[in-house]
Amino acid sequence: MDRNRVNRYPGTDSVAERRRTLFSPESKFKQLREISDDDLVLLLGHRNPGEVYGSIHPPLDEMELPYDPISELIEPSPGARAGDKIRYLQITDSVYFSPLFPAFRGRMYHIRYPGIDTIVYAGRQLIEARERDLERYAKELIETELFDPARTSIRGITVHGSSLRLDEDGMMFDARRRTRYDPASGEVTYIKNQMAVPLDRPVNVGKPMSDEDLLSISARYGGGSVPYRDAKELWELTGRILRQHVEGGFDPGWIEKK
Image (cartoon, rainbow, N blue to C red; front, top):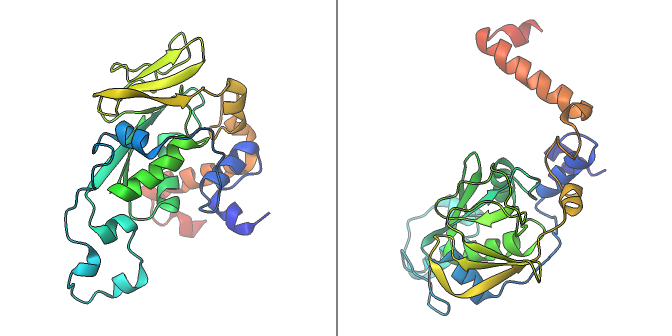
């Protein structure tokens, strides 16, 4: 096994392997649906389809900037080079075997997407980036196995519902009713954008995955996946870190004594 992948996360079970996959910038995720650029713009709600990107400064190539050695080391993203406004995407994940969960979204975003800022909450994850960069990242986050129409939801406001029981149709509860499930086709459409503003036309995001498929790519321990205590290597490592943190916190010289 590649040592670089091992160093990203310990363990030999299926959940540990999935976590290493998520934390690898080289990973290619399976595409499950196709969202057009115009439909993506509708879901995000930052501008109208076909409208030019807003800007907060002129393009970098047109500016006379003071010397900065960092600018010679880091290539500006397309959005930063163009001077785009900062925009956001907020996603919430159900506790019922969603493909991802907030804490790991934050780690994956930093590893995979340059030029972002991100905030982790208990049940949701906010990513901010230059607008054209954000749209490029959002395409992967929504079109691939990282998104499930029933267990993952795009919600800029009134996000709560990630930890609540599922509706009768298997969808996460949403007080703003941004999505609609069609029992006949088994498909989910967004009828409101992430800010719960009604859309001019619905955006289809396809069929939810089965519980079996969700469990097969689960990054969570417990429940129907790998019991946490059965992940011996991970249990020993995290237990050792916790003990060092607690006992070392009371006695800074404790680690040296060991």
